Image 1: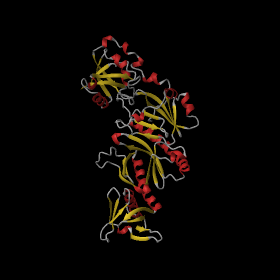
Image 2: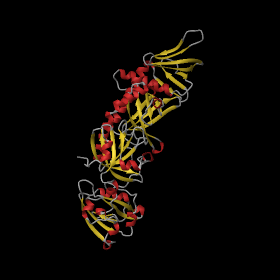
Image 3: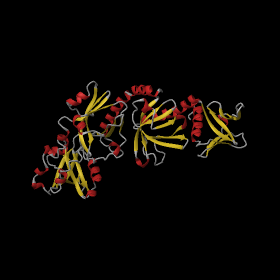
Image 4: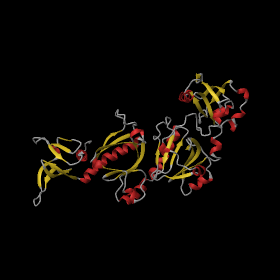
Length: 493
């Protein structure tokens, strides 16, 4: 069993009323001031409720010493005396301490919290303000904070600590009310500004319920989470952001999978709602994390229709919102150029990523996206490749104005009929100047500004068409038509 059991506070049960509570358990919630508070999670079919742990988060999360004693009550006889303490870890909770200090802070490694009932507390021989001099004979007297954390993490079931109570430093520890409180000695993760806590003090006191409809849940949004114990949960409108921490990676994965399962079960309903607003079928919908310059990231809700890939900052709730996407990329002019493990480019900082290029009148746009799981990556890869081919089959033909040999013409590109350049003069019928099938196209290229070059082999020289604007859109469309035609043959395009 991965979850701790706890009686649900009355207000939390009221908030979850009307929905079957499928799962419940204790996690930690990041609060203002980089504090962490133990909370009860109630997961229903359509909602997620966070409420304070019964008995009050402050009473359980702010105890400094064994049984809640104050540091001032540590016997004076222990001050500056080396002591050896044997700690036997429990199956859950590790050593049950938090640490501060380190060489970079010009301080020894200090015990900043001891959690009641866990291994360190049960020794009745350790105190907040104890400096950890060594761990299993490994000297920590000149260790950095990170070095100390790694040494403590690598310990086995039995840990021998050499400590010395630092009376002169204990007031610093005791007064650090904004300090870190958690499952073990892992240092705090300082989260990005996008994830600043959005819960009010009233929410923290009474609890908060978030509807799961198109919620975003992530385990990869926090790059410094080396132990993979963190969850980010964001409401569909982006107004509620929860950062939760589990006691271990297995528990975090369990909650991620369970919450994601309930969110996925609501997607058919979301698709129907959006279909009514957009008046188009929604082929696929999901959250993507776009990688922006300067290591910034942004969550984007992506919708795939028959012809377009649409991006929104949050779930659109009305016709006006859905008609104004943050980005719109025609599938026929878009190309998946990378999916999966990095090809050695520093642009791709995760294996769960893909790159999308779109040909526009301003040139090529490249967007980098990441997802949460291999299954999501495989799904998006298939959806985008198939969507491009189906859009090409649906659209069939694209026509654009151009100039060839000094004449104003139109260029038609048809998936079956190939390339046609024709001119229409006043009072005269349409005159076809060039007609070639796709099968004779040997090469296509462009100058990135306005010229499109087509080589059909049989001509004395390549055809040079002035498209009056950036040719990248047409170049991408040609590629999409060719790729769709190859797919027709049962070949991999």
